[in-house]
Amino acid sequence: MSSAHRYLIDTASHLAGDAAFLRRWRVLLEQSAGPERIFQSPEFFDYMIAAGDEGAGLYSITERDSGVIVGIVPVRLRRHSLDFAVGRRRYASVPLRCVMLLGSVPLLPADPALLDQLLQFLLAHYPRCQAVASPAMPADSALWRSVSGSALLARRYLWHLPQGWSACHRIALPADFAAYLAQFGAKRRYNLARQVRLLREHGRDRLELHCIEHPAQLGRLADALARLTTPPRRRQLLSDATLLEFARRGLLLCYVLECGGQPCALMLGQRHADTLYLHNLFHDAALDHLSAGTVLLHLAIEHLCRHHFRRIEFGYGAPAHHHSSSNVTELRAQLLVLPPTLKNRLICRLHRGLICVLAWAKRRARAD
Image 1: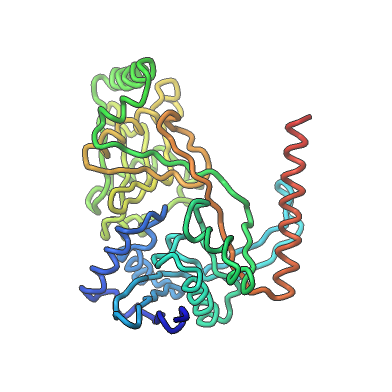
Image 2: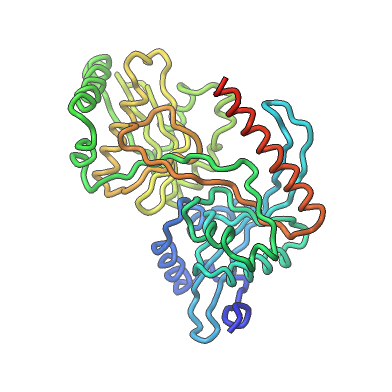
């Protein structure tokens, strides 16, 4: 039986509040190993609808014979610029309208034929969009294996990784904090305890970690942001209104560390299930010698272990404050899937050529 006859793809936004649909949605989320499940969650979809995101969409995949929902795919529409740049100098840019797969790895069976059906459906449903995008596709994922290894998909689509592969960091958290500390050598454990002690002594024995999850706690977070960030930097971060909406939906998880009654470090993040998604970490530059950022991360990890969290996701790039002995890296990439038109073929080939030239130049510069 062909995939199109085996599965039915349909709009499901009207089912977002249905109890049975929500239960099935959560089961599919629990079964997923995707790195960004928070963005596939009912709570995040509810946030997008409440925020007036007109590009938010929700689709269900049902097995026709059994009537069982085997996939739920939330999406949003975004513009992407395919830049032709060398260093900071941009020579050209090609704008693309994209259907973004929220969560990067869609919640559906690992079947290339079904993925083909989904891509056809999305590109037909959004005729003004030129591509389907996965913002953080892991190299070790069923999605990438399907895209790169399926002859069917290779005939019907172009795939492109605009930025190539990049390392994403995460920390796997064991069942208790003692087991986490056991990953370090004696010297590292001593240094961490010493950093905590010195910062506490600096605050005259007042060192307090505050977990920010609920709307009533946002005042403390706002005070810390005002103290530890500049106004231009603050405008680049999540707005107060967005922080409030995340807190109302149980998606917010931030930490403020106070030393002597004053904020000395803060962590902005979101949560879903047993994972903290860490976005930003700020600290008082005047306390650089006391490693306030490292102390905050250390105490936050203790709190997370105590509350049964199992992972911290840092996303793309190397975090400024990290425990290198416990970090794990995973290669991920932004994936664009496009129809194989002549224009798209030319754009992708030119952009891939530029990426290859830049990679060669970097290798040559390191060798010299």
